[in-house]
Structure formats: C-alpha cells, structure tokens
Length: 112
Image (cartoon, rainbow, N blue to C red; front, side, top):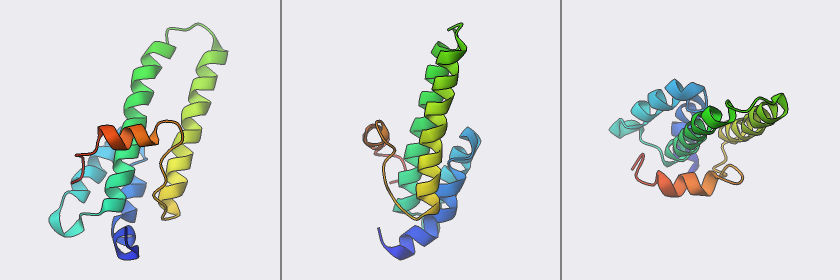
C-alpha cells in the first residue's frame, strides 16, 4: 500500500470501526471507483469480522449467568476494536491479534 492509497482510504477505515452501520457505510464509500483503497478494504474486512464475531459470540455468551464471563467477553472485544481503530488512525495495516488473518482470508473478495 502506498502512502497515497492510505491517505485516500483512511477516513473509510476509521468509519468502519464505528458500529456495524459504519462497516456498511465504509464499504459503500470505498466501492466508488475513484475512491477505492486497499487500506480501507483491509480495515473494512477486519471490522466486519470483529462485528460478526461479536454478535455471534455475544448471543452465546449472553446465556451465561456469570458477570465474570460477560465482562471478560466485552473487555476482550473492546481491546480488539481499539487495536484495530488505533491502527487505522496510525495509518497501519496490521491484522487484529488472534483472528485478523482469519478475517482477511474469509472476506478476501470484499473490496476488490
């Protein structure tokens, strides 16, 4: 990724971490031919994977009656979201720990 590509997609990369609606907005903004950015596509794939995993596991974790489990779940995902968001702000294309490479593989066609 070039510096020009990173600067062009930085706004969409940041938007993608702000709720699941932000992912959808960033995806459509990044799909415009003159604004397509590999940097934004990378972060859109990361945040989409995080949001889908958060909702899927949240449904399962919600059935536990222990606040230790639920608070650990929220802290874990908060750290992952903050890591991805800070990388988007810092113009870095680093995968989120543990699951980022998996998301890049699954959503490889997204943003191409």
